[in-house]
Image (cartoon, rainbow, N blue to C red; front, side):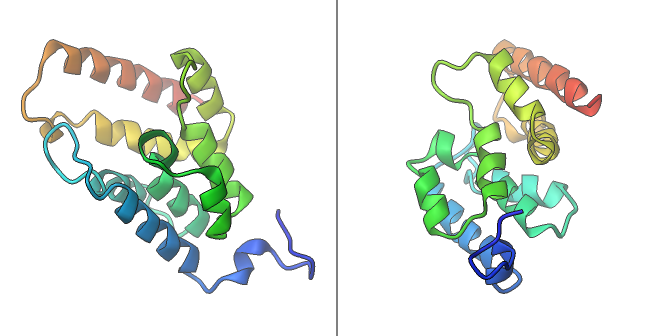
Length: 158
């Protein structure tokens, strides 16, 4: 657990909800001009993933809201630190971020290495396999859904 120079847990530096508020604003601004494959504002995806967690754990909710920020937006880990995000939040997002050149197997291993990332990724996969989010279903969508479903099963067995 991270502590400041007075020995307080870093998350305790903020009022309840403040970290989540900061992450929500960052995500809304960063995903503002993005849309999913069905034409829906993209910000609704991380909000849905957060809701699917059924948790009041503020750091976990921040990971869910921020899970696509590094990969899909021009947000950096330093920006997250500057906003006061904890190491737990940043590490959870890092484990959910597929980096250029990283194989799918390497990415899956990274997700599996972090319990928070596993929980968020399972919700992410559930939402991403909902074909109702698509305008139409092509063969590539079916193949992607099968790949996501297999990963979901792997995560559920951890």
